[in-house]
Image 1: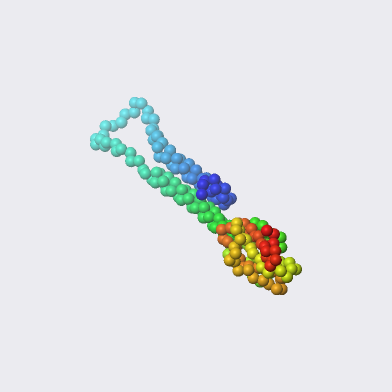
Image 2 (image 1 turned 60 degrees about the horizontal axis):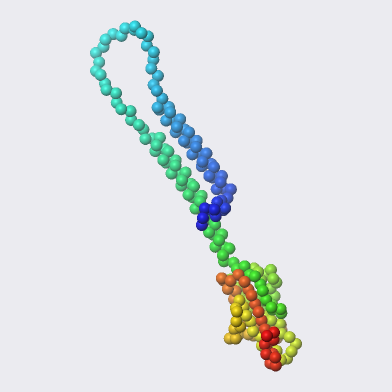
Length: 212
């Protein structure tokens, strides 16, 4: 998944979380800089009047110690940056997970483009005729009955079907339903196909395959 896909699926919640995190980070940096400027400010030296006589005192000279730079500010900044990065990674991982889950759901369905010869009908396993909009909602693995109506000719004795194929399958098992007066086969919708292209022909004892 590229960066454009990630940005395309970025929702309002993620944007709000991003801006809140950004504002908190900016405010914390402002406070850290403020504390740093206070610690580094020059000490105020009183202005002693000239000519003031100070009695001599016996004292031992103390060498000034080197200022110790506190690492407290740097540690706070590092921790804050790590928290910010962690929050941003969590947001992006959530977006990617939701996107992949959506793709999985859409990938399981099969969008059917129905193309058929005249006289062909598709039924459910219970012999309920499916309309065009219902056929387009079929998914991979669904079982259907594909039938072609016979004609009032006693010489018609068989039929053959070609489903998403270039050549006729002479070995397929074709059945006949007397009530529907139609030849039919049982078919399972392929999981990888997006087109359901069906052709069928009736066979006559005298004329052979009709339509050739």
